[in-house]
Amino acid sequence: MRIRTNTSKLSKRVMEENDTRFQKVGALLGKKELQEAYMEVERIINSSRPFPFTLMKCAALLLTVDKKERSDEVASMALGCPLKDDDEIVQLSIAMRGLGRYGDSLSLLERVGTDLPGLDLERARTLIASGDADSCLEILDSIAGIEADLIRCGALSRTGSHDEAIALAKKIVEDRGLDYETGSLLLGSMLRAGLVKEAKRLANSMVKDAKDADSLALKAYVMRINGRTPAAMNYANQSLLKEPCHIGALWNLALCLLEKGRKDEAKLLAGAINEASPASPLALEILDLCNR
Image (cartoon, rainbow, N blue to C red; front, side, top):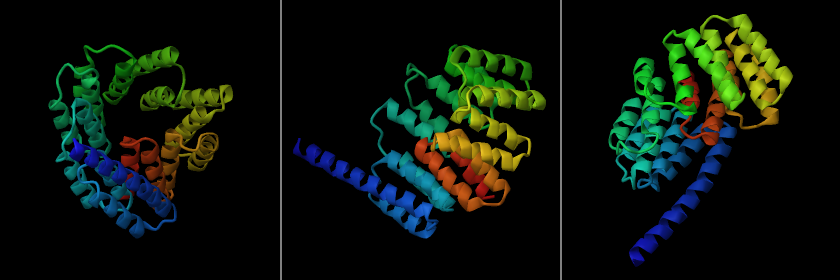
């Protein structure tokens, strides 16, 4: 018993030290001191080999400092760590999905008991993230509920079933209300269907009705898609004034910065997204585009 207690105390101390180091990494990234940030991440890795989720956070940060190969190595280290239960396996699968390691994500889910709630939804999320919308729809065929509908709507839109996607997106907005997730689902479905003018009008009405962080970020989304980069940046910044960590606003602003060739600033926003929403695929998308 004493050994377990000491180990627990040691783990707690390491995690507290790492929290301080992660804060330092964030500060260094903010000052664009990438090499110093990288060295601090390596210090965290060296003290965190038994901790898979700390390693995954490091793997994401390594992408921010242009260390793709090292990021892959650290993510593979996380795969070799012991996991306590099915919940931890699922959480690691989600983190792998966030890094774009879709094969690893699906393999981890195969290790989980089939009776675990939400397991098929996680499979569906990984499949659509990997671009396999058809297989995603097959899994969702027998699943009801708002979470399934959110995934289903995006998959329908990506397979060209635009009318079904738009109808479902409208229903989701009616049932759950308008926020960035539901609004971007509806606007994205409309834009993929070629309903550009209609999407613009809807985004305008959203801002007029609410003028909150979500509606402003949605307006930024539509402006960006239509090539109105300065306007998109303006709306994204307005959204961030109301909610500094708004994921949609950060993502749209980062993509606008990339269009202007401002990769370093876009990477910082990717880091902010990952900090606010660990394993977010939006952060990975930005970093992938930065490294091309």
